[in-house]
Amino acid sequence: MIKVFFVTAALLGANTAFAACNPGDWKDPVASAQQGSMITGRAPIGSSIDVNGKALKQGKNGDYVFGIARDATGVAKVTIKPSCGDARVVSVNVLKRDFPVERVNGVPPKTANPTGAIAQRIEAEQARVTAARQRNDDRQDYLQKFIWPVTGRISGRFGSSRSYNGQPGAAHSGMDIAVGTGTPVKAPAGGVVTFADPGLYLTGGTLVLDHGQGISSNFLHLSRIDVKVGDVVRQGDVVARVGATGRATGPHLHWGMNWLDTRIDPLLLLEKP
Ligand SMILES: [Zn+2]
Image 1: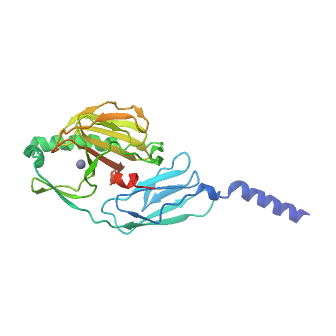
Image 2 (image 1 turned 120 degrees about the horizontal axis):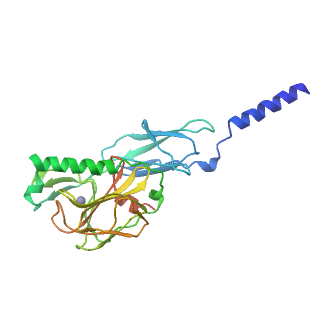
Image 3 (image 1 turned 90 degrees about the horizontal axis):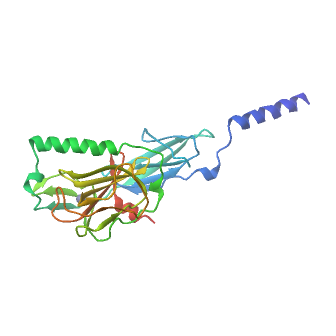
């Protein structure tokens, strides 16, 4: 009798300290993904999670998210240590893409190769935008199926190598959609406005929407901004109007997306089943 009592007590103790993981609390990331992808997953609440050693925050339902950079290669190794069981390691194979080369001619010469005070101004403005993207709050708007902010022809693709007036520039950080000045821009998913400035040197009217856990959208070259920092917007809300401000050769919407400092490709989100 005494022996049985002890065994029972030991089992009860174990159950209290280590509740088993519920299989329904797991949703592993995809096995492979293209450069520029946003990757989501879910793990039991209270897990510690990292991707290639970089810690990820977990949302209130256990969701986590990260981005795969344009130039990433190999695997993104996700390590999850739940409080309810053994660690789990999931590898996402990074699929290489062929990025096109785009030559952009006819940009205002003063914006093609800025120097001196102008270069300093651009750097300071860029630092403000970068700071806005560091917000890593507990929202999961990024889980929505993203919609097009405007509909039109894609005139520039994420990741293309770019030259401006014949001078090599950085890879294109987002996608361009050719639509006329004044076209309303809709929020592609819900979010919080974290940056709004009508007149940055390179990017003109510039707006950043935060979709939670480090995922943000930026809209550039806007002719008008209809929201202010701190506003909460829902998917489909009109937030701005298309323009050709900053370094632009004509009216279009530039839509960029980030996971913190990592650029990701909005088109992959639109094409996601
Ligand atoms: Zn662009």
